[in-house]
Length: 555
Image (cartoon, helix red, strand yellow):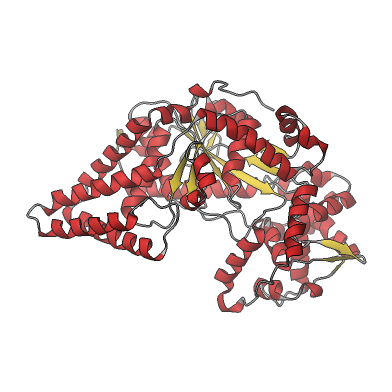
């Protein structure tokens, strides 16, 4: 367990922001109003018209419990106000006032806070929660918080460049960009970086849907979360959210956000990322450089590795229905009460692990940042960030150029995800089993395979082990090339790797993802197996390119 960088919570950037919340909200509103001033009359009219129409449709067709009160009435009044503006001789000025009212509402909706007593309570409560989730119930439940934390450190493990990140934290603004596969992700990352990483709490973007629960809303409203409503696609809201995110970074508030945008339904590590919030980091860096502020915005890709994702089956079904469309006709089987009881029993009696793997810190252009805060190009030579924003020695705002920088940053993050996709026995056995079955049935696509009866899925155990040894040797080649990251648990006795992987993959699910029966590898849940197979799917092209002579010596 690492010592805390800032033991006094009053020194944490997220607390300082909360203490000055009203002033920060005003700053966001003022910044947005300046942006509105730059918009032409016709463009603003079109933006308002489209926004009000979309919002009234959203309120009518897709309301949420977490929505601000009186939304229908607010947008009805805003529509009437906009219609009156059009009749005015000064419609442009009136529209700016209407836009300002909407921006006020959006900023208040987005803004969160941070409360020290709530945070201290949450620390203890989450220790109990994660101890319950990751350890089987036994007499350790009566142990104190310190002993629980010490036990959790053995199954909630931080890998990678965490110590470099700690060093950079002192002088720069850290933006963690994790992969996203579970509703647990936000609280899990926040808990682990605080408890085991020794870093102050981060501000983080949380989907507004999570605030539907009054219980969760109470805590998230007081733990540094700001609200993100993914239903809102209008330009005014997206610009407001981006401005909020940018000003957080400029203020030195360390932030977590998920550039994938939403949970990965397929189980794959994200390859295509949303650019909006990443672009706000590029803009924040430009503003800091123009003010001669030496702080850098440091982007840290983080890969979350669960052995069991609680929502795996529902997520992969959503993915299959979307991608398979009319080809995917599998219907969910009704779950008898015994399955729910088995699930609860599994939580009580089974253990699991989760890994956070910190990738290489990057600047906002995708360059590597060393432990001293120097940006290095692909040849390892220092680069000066100001040069990216200058033309003929002067800072220039070039939206097209900065959009290219944002795409390059997204590509660099995706490469780090792939490289740091920590390979555990649970991932390995699922990937190898489904991959082997696919190769045997090479005339079928994935949609057809996952719809076949589980009774048809069978691999001779001896053949499976031979296949796995070859696959593991190839993965070792990729690790030597810096393209993969293999757990030490993959290097134990090979039979133990297989046994542990089969026992732990999808450990919390009602139906066994993999099992051994009569010297055969079988499954009770082919769809869930497909989800866990997808975890390592991004390695497939690299695995194909490895020649036999490259891996034979590693078998």
